[in-house]
Image (tube, rainbow, N blue to C red):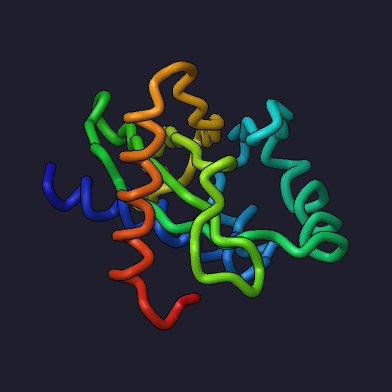
Length: 153
C-alpha cells in the first residue's frame, strides 16, 4: 500500500505542477478517459473537454500557482485511492498566498493498465465560515509549504 500511496501522491503533484506550468495538455493527459473535474467555481468538466476548457484560461488569464500539503492518501479498493489535500495559491509576481482563495482538494485515482490516472478531481474553496482559527491555520500551513518550496516562487 505504501507504494500505491506514493504513486497517487506523485500523480497529484504532477497535476498541480502542470497547472503551475500552465500546461493544459499535460494537465488533461493525467485524467482517465471517463474522468470529471469540479473546479473552484463549481464548474464541471469532463475529461474530453478538459484541455479545451483550460487552454483559454492559461492563454487569457494570469493564473496563480498552487502550493499544497497532502492530508491523506487512502486506498478505497483494489487500484482505487482517495487523496485529500489543502492548497493555497500564490498570485503571479508575488511570493505569498492569497488567503481568499485557499482551497481543499479531493482526488480519486484509479490504476489502469499499470498507470495511475485521475478519475475525479474536486477543488473546493476553504471558507471556514465563522471559524477564523481554521482559516488562519490553513494560511499558515500554506506559508510553510512556500518556505519548503523556495525557488518555485
